[in-house]
Image 1 (cartoon, one colour):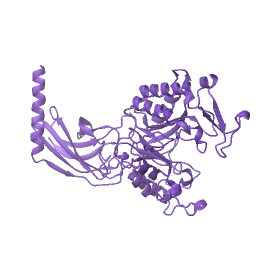
Image 2 (image 1 turned 30 degrees about the vertical axis):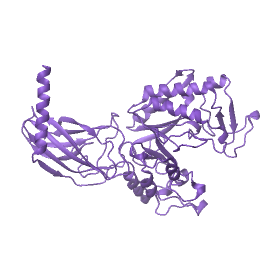
Image 3 (image 1 turned 90 degrees about the vertical axis):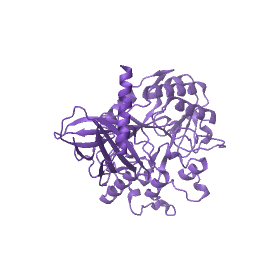
Image 4 (image 1 turned 180 degrees about the vertical axis):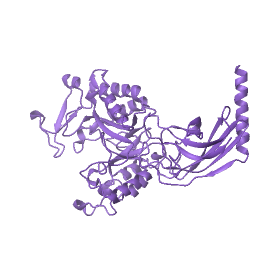
Length: 467
């Protein structure tokens, strides 16, 4: 029986290869704007019900002590509740864990505090502190503490084992260390984790995650006396002062800006295989989508050109509240501009043409896909074709060997599909293409074509054929 099966498979491949060489039905598709709420990209609000602007993801912080209840003791209810809440709205989550968050309760696990972990309380606005009197709005732990380091390694390992590749989780920003989990304790830099501890945290994430993308706050090259090198590690980056401190100004005092830091670290091409995210600087919320953004408090340093920032960083997603809050003026002009920029961010796929070849009981489809965005699509979500009959029922589907991953901006690729036609009734069929979201009710990848969603929600209509 195995011999018969192998012979059948070889025969199928020979038929497919022969059909590819023969003339087929050529289909031309018209372009159109892609959906603003395409998955894994775009503007991202804080977790909650938001219908003010289209989106496919939600962001939330979580304190580590919401999970870690004792040495090697983890209760995942808080994270599962959050992921279920967000995914219940058809969205993927972006999560960041923290130990310290100015003006908020500490995220340090209680068992470490009970065990004598030293902490420094200091004022994040004036950088002053008076531990004897317990003053200060931020609590920084002693990052050299052996028990804290064991706790972090255990937590990250358990997190990856349970959630790496979870379809509810779109991205993790590495977090953990520093104020807001942003890998700094500025201006109290002497309180930040030493390089050895930074490497321990990165090593734990690198060991524990291979499918869920991990993004770091700052790109770092070799030779930095305070910060561990991360340029060669499999992590992306997030610019949390987007459109405010993103582009290179040429001024030495602005060398900490995102793009000068990327250049200094040697990571200008990192976007080709790792995602770039971030947050629009709160002071620029709403304003950044104006024709001439206003920054009156710093007339000599205006809000940076948003489109240029997107094109230069190759950003895929950005946290934002300007389009998601009644506190900000969402003018029609701002909303339209924001929609244009979201389409530009990350990937933006269009199908200019397709070719159908049928014969000997098999169907071969060649679909040309072009990426007109600024970054690749990073997840490996399989593409599939479908045949829909006259009753609007999809009667056959077939997955391709490749999806939409790794298609660089401006590039076009061909994706091939084959399907058996045996058992199908004679008649007219509509050929469809889809890239479904692994999240059951998540947004599928929408194409920038007129016929996307024309005949079936979440499917691109390629054309019709008669059997």
